Amino acid sequence: MQLRLDTHMHTRRHSPDSDLDERQLVTQALRRGLNGVVITEHHFQWPEEELAELRRELVAPPGFVLLSGFEYSSRKGDILVYGLSHEWAQKYPPAREPEEMLRIYQEAGAVCIAAHPTRERIPFDDRILDMPFEGIEVESCNMAAHEQRLARKLAQGLQLPMTGSSDAHRIEDLGAYATAFEGPIETMADFVDCVRRGAFAPADRNLS
Image (cartoon, rainbow, N blue to C red; front, top):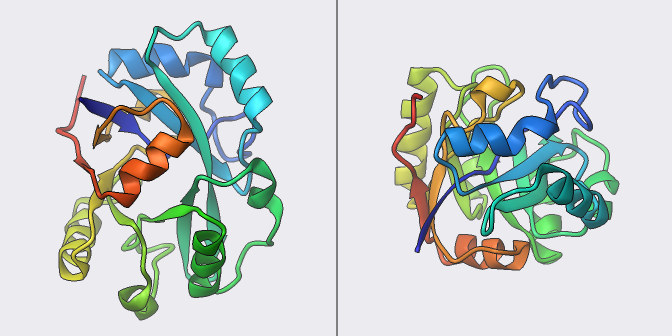
């Protein structure tokens, strides 16, 4: 069973730089042909009770995946973190060393994806070559074409699986890029297991 998910986005409820209305998530996701989304606010993770309330409010169709992780901004590069409780998102201040934070999160049980690692404004440095990420984000709305090519080359060199995701801060960007996962995925535990198995790859782009 293959699921098409957008696993990197920010809503206006919890990310000050976003205009994306969380109440439109399901409608836009379905329009883009997605089977679900994973919200990744900056240094905030939706508590499960708040996420459950959003699920009820949006009346998502059966099987629609609505989960939450968070994005940590290190001194050199951003890290997408999945599989921890919401308290972890605010446990450490921004701008700590990337290899330190990757180790801390993975030891706590998370899986981590390097977000837009070759983006000129906020790139990782050469330390990424020795950092054991579970995957590399190679496509997003905030990566130029040459940055996407560099990210693919990086992932191939490191022999790491790749993701595509919108990094949406506007509702119209949600689902512009996505990742195909070999499911089933119903819970964050399922998602983490799928990432650990490397059972994912960038999905064909939906331009509708």
